[in-house]
Length: 314
Ligand SMILES: Nc1ncnc2c1ncn2[C@@H]1O[C@H](COP(=O)(O)OP(=O)(O)OP(=O)(O)O)[C@@H](O)[C@H]1O
Image (cartoon, rainbow, N blue to C red; front, side, top):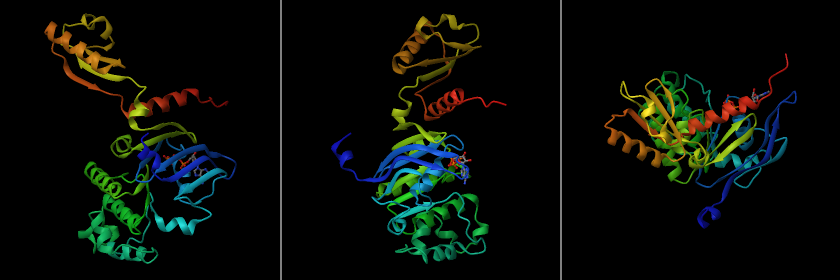
């Protein structure tokens, strides 16, 4: 960690936070993490892992049963009036009246937001300037998500909570949203993102945490989270060339003509494979070599967690 990192102000802090629902079910079971100013932190997890339950505590919508939460140095629940004007929250479903126009919706929200941006500026920011007069019910799903985002950005927040911001968007809409989030980050906004898309976390997050059953199972940069997992080389051998002809160190799980090698030394293994292929004059078909992805790390975590879970007694 550089001295610059150490001097960065901690904007979001969760310390050993717990949250239970009526009936005693503990959805968040001792979660700790911090987010520095200007950082984008992604919270990932299996279904029902406790992401939303955690984020609601940070947004000041509920009080933790144990542990402490601080946003911009304040308790977001007890000191809501100090924290709320400085944060923006993009909910999964905005739920605004669908008969209003886009501009009317923004103006309505601006009425409840201190220091709101002008309507045109908020809409331009999310690429909806040309849709100002259209009724909300006529917007596409992707445009509605962008309107949700415009409303979250209305009060020029220092901290932005994005709850699954690209769910329901097509590939182009998703990439447009990523571009926008990157621009916001360049302006110094701190972002806490929850997402089901690992690719989204990979593209945007400075650091991330993966939750499962109410706790953080692993956290760090994408590189840190994937570091311990092997890289993968895949290819097919031409008909008539058996996997047994590969150098001993590279012999791997063969599935018919398809070969997959898992290795912690990707560069060395690949060099060796390519040298063998060149010397033996064997074309490697559909060759694909890649470092471990976040998706593989996530699936491993979900799988190993499932294996250690108790089997319910009938
Ligand atoms: N109001 C509630 N009352 C009781 N249990 C709840 C309540 N809200 C959530 N839960 C439970 O708490 C657990 C965590 O839910 P939460 O919505 O925080 O998970 P999540 O990680 O956001 O899930 P998803 O990715 O599916 O949205 C789940 O088992 C859920 O059923």
